[in-house]
Image 1 (cartoon, rainbow, N blue to C red):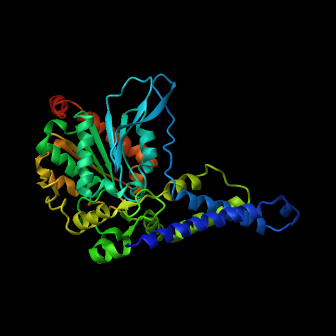
Image 2: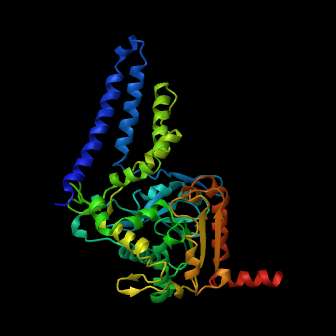
Image 3: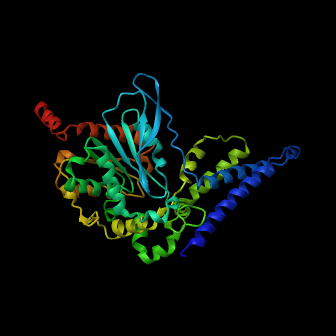
Length: 425
């Protein structure tokens, strides 16, 4: 069976490294070594702690960790995670804030299915929750989904988004981040044609590959340099015997993680070297910046083979979204049919994953929208993660996005506000 032995071998290597780290930590922590004035034991113990934690995190889904939010009354309000729509490959999860009047902004965060869990957007959720009601697409790890549940490709992903938007209703603001940007655009166009009453109010597209050829990056160069046969041979394996999805063809999370790290190998090597040195000196902490970042970064999930391969072939190679030629469940989606949804593009000046121009290409496809229904923002100095997390997001992008949502929240899609501005001008 294709790749099953390789999949289990990767898990065995991960498990062995976790065990070696735990063994080194335990061995070097015996009290007797306190009688030996040799820093080797502190260094070995530190290496063991960091190694054990790092390899253990690779198979654990992080917690959201959003326990409460401060309301306008100054009190902490408990936040509960509620699954409103449960599906085999992903849920629609709501962060319900108790004992707080419902906020008028209803926001659907479309999380990427690109190696990391939706918890990668934890800080995005936390920053929006005081002012919005938040839902998010919480995708499942493919290794845990039985083969009997069938396939899941980019068409299925798009139909999941369609169903989630229908569930939430027309008073919704959709915020898609990174990989799902073209599919969120397609889902909105699908609704515009087949169920216009379920369209969201606004659609904010943040750093995604609508047209990968608009600006080259290492990601697009790789997509062009390999054939689909080579990609399937190199990347696809079957889930091993340890998990419920045994036998399912996947692009393993551990393999993806190797690719992530290789892109910035020196930076990651220095970060772990510094962490081990700090731990040996007793200067590290359980919740320091290193642990906060790598607990999330190292937590990876398998994605279905058909989703990964169809993304590369149809989004990057054939550019079906960029050419307005995307087909979902036998229906050709026409992005020009979007006429009542305001669309905002957000890009980072230094984004090396989805370079400026790739996401902006969406505005050229939206021929059915008026100019006042379209907007764009290029964040100076921001990289890929900076446009949805960190200082650039908090200080600049988040306020702009919420202003855009508010400007187009009325039933007339913002026409009343536009008339008011014109009449007062």
